[in-house]
Each structure stands twice: as C-alpha cells, then as structure tokens.
Image 1 (spheres, rainbow, N blue to C red):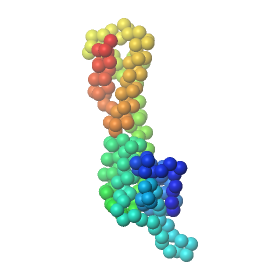
Image 2 (image 1 turned 180 degrees about the vertical axis):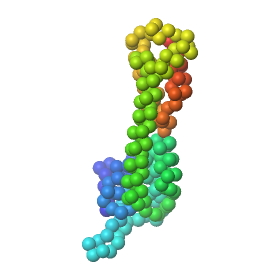
Image 3 (image 1 turned 60 degrees about the horizontal axis):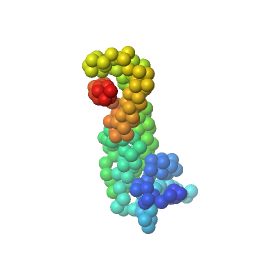
Image 4 (image 1 turned 90 degrees about the vertical axis):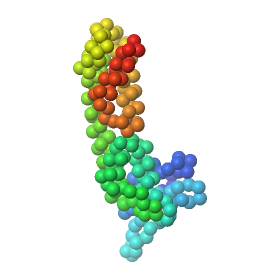
Length: 192
C-alpha cells in the first residue's frame, strides 16, 4: 500500500505521524521506501488468495523515522519513555508493526494529556491573576505586595508564564516542576 501525500516527503524531511498512522491502519506492518527523492510509507498485507506481500527498502530504518516523528509531535521526554517501554530499537530494513505504531500513538496521547493536566495545576497554582499559592509565595520571596500589582501586570505575568509552559512542553520538559515555575515567577517579578 502506497501513501502518496500531496507534498513530497523529501521536502518535509521525514514522514509525519499521520503517514505512519494511515499505513498502520491499512496494513499489518509499516515500511519506509525511498522512491527517487521522496519517501513513501509502505505497508504489508495478504492477497485475496492468502499470499503475503510486502514492500520493503533494505536500508531504511522505519522505526527510527517513526520515533523521530513521534518526538517532533510529542517531545523527547514522552518519546524516550515510549521507546523504552515498547523496545523500539533501530532496525534498518525491518518493518515496524502496526500494533507498535498504534500502541505508541496511544501512549503518546495519554502521556501528553496527563502531563498537560499536571502543568495545568501548576499554572493555576502560580497564576498571578488567580492569586495562586505559588504566586503568593514568589511575591513573599521578592518582598512584593501582591496587591500592589495592577490587573494588567498580573495578566502580563500570566501570559509570560503560559509562554514558558508552552516552550517547556515543546522541548519535552513537561511537566514543569513547582520549583521551575517559582524560578520563572521570581524572574518575571524582578523585571517589574
């Protein structure tokens, strides 16, 4: 089974998770093959007569390309855990089972949602607008009266904190610890 995306995969660097997911949905295993200058996600299956068929390129490491796509979407932290748990070792020329793709995607989505929940609680605790306990602690550490900060300044602090949480998540550094959030808040409070 060939998947022919509208844009050449070579221009994108590597296949995306959606390419792997589609190939895994339609076949038992996923392979990568190089056709000219563009990569294509291929699959294996069985003919109506019961004969096994497969499309394979001997030197392409499908597993490595899959884990790179996973890391691009979910970050290194989540990906490293999934690689370890599922034993996704580099395997040039060998297929990646559709089951492993489905398990990895499920684990990544579940982990991402769980980590987002932890970060949400930390963000709320350190919210200047909500006057969370972490925010009040940071103010005391900087000898700042929280009431002296305008509504606009508290909103600016929350916006800056949100950006830092998003950057941490994108870099696979989620969940953010309370200590890290405290450090960020203190820096922002020092900036005036």
